[in-house]
Image (cartoon, rainbow, N blue to C red; front, top):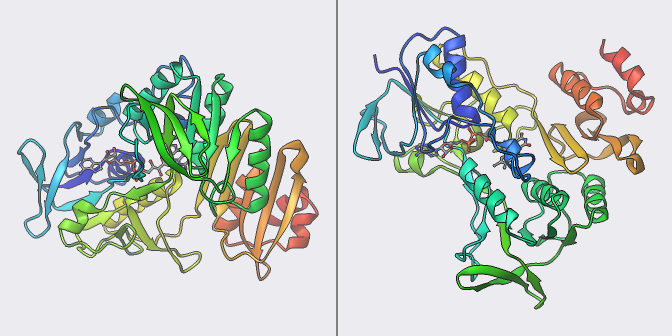
Length: 404
Ligand code: FAD
């Protein structure tokens, strides 16, 4: 018996290994990672970890977990090729590994920006622990930081480095922050608060090139010719899924490795989960590829059940959080296609939630510093319960009563 091999030891891969054991799988489980670390939490990397003096990454599981659960953790090894028919992997360094079932949890990588000067030292993007260490070291030596991209990661880094005393400029190509990931009120609220702390934010602006001295970046030049001094430039313009391995093996991809409701790819013995996987979402009927810890974790749990032959269809409620300075943003549900909303709380007090509706059905909730609304939302959407906008507007007490 060759057992299950998992490629990638991020949030998805490690949870899949853990769930296989928790659900009683007793064959071999091997977890292959091209990183050299004990698998770690990614979200703190753009929040607390890059603060001056913060030393330790947060492991996803302690070292004892892997030996104690008989999970063969193989760090520092890249899977170079999948022989889908022969059920065998080719590994960097020449070895090979046979499998009965394969889980691809290869995640995603930062989108690169083909910009003159992007190969200068001091130009970085943030995905791995190694990247975060570099960002922290560079930031300690930088007075001016330019961040390209006004998405979650870019803004989290902006807030953290601003609090650490750097001069921070965020440059975003479109005319608002946070893409279409959040409602415009949230995006403008985040902008106002960041600006109030002294972060400079340029929207509708692109960078034409980066300038350097002796091979180190020294400035970012905007398309209109403004020179923004920078000893560090962070590129945070989104990610692309790691699909190449699957593609080369003839597995179907479409903005990610395509999976069905049980996480199976077009080759049924091969599953895919997490940032790398795309699928039809049960809530909206639309095709998605979600980049969140929740999505990675819930898909991993389901993949383990699929392997054990207990597969139900994926029906987890999507949720996400981001900490940007003094704003805890939390989202639950998928809000695109909304046609009306109800606001609870007070924007000026930095504590409010937006309940999004389509045709009087609750789609999702976005909260700023109102974790109770978020938790209640997870409960309601998980139960398929949609309170009327009137019930929501009457406040959380009535809502809690309606849910109970
Ligand atoms: P990953 O965690 O990316 O893991 C994939 C692993 O596979 C990597 O280690 C990769 O090196 C490895 N790999 C790839 N190809 C191979 C190969 N051929 N051979 C061997 N190994 C391979 N989400 C939230 O919900 N909230 C947050 O606040 C939040 N903050 C974030 C902050 C940062 C800085 C980052 C980078 C992400 C954040 N996310 C957040 C997103 C979240 O971390 C991801 O959605 C999650 O990590 C996805 O898990 P994954 O296992 O699919 O991929």
